[in-house]
Amino acid sequence: MPDWQKSSYCGQGESCVHVAAEDTAVLLMESADPSGVVLRMPKTEFAGLLADIKAGAPAPTAPDGTVRLGPVTTTTDKWRAFQEGVRAGEFDHVVDTPHATAT
Image 1 (cartoon, rainbow, N blue to C red):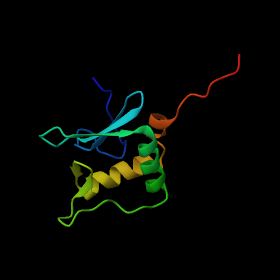
Image 2: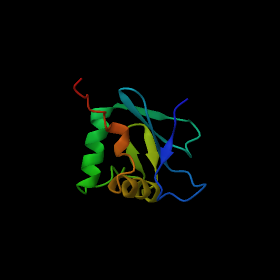
Image 3: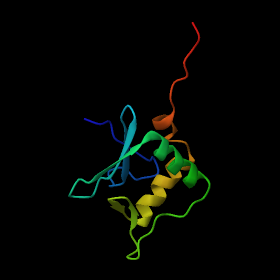
Image 4: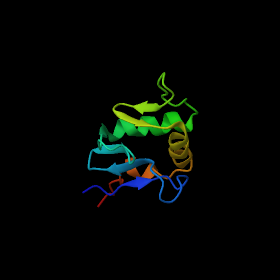
């Protein structure tokens, strides 16, 4: 079972965008989504998403006002909480790979 993390900018007990790491991929989900849709993306793609958010890229907002990243849909408030966590570096460890050391 994945070890899910949400931004500290998301209130306690609130549904939010959650992130979990696998060996080569990152999982994203909206905890309030009753369908349980999970987006799986390569770590390199997630690293690009983090870089875009840190650079000020706009939210992927749909015409109905929701924020959609692939099959994951959330509200603008929840996306803002996720963005604040990204800007604070809360998800950097998900894509950081340990550097090999010479022996």
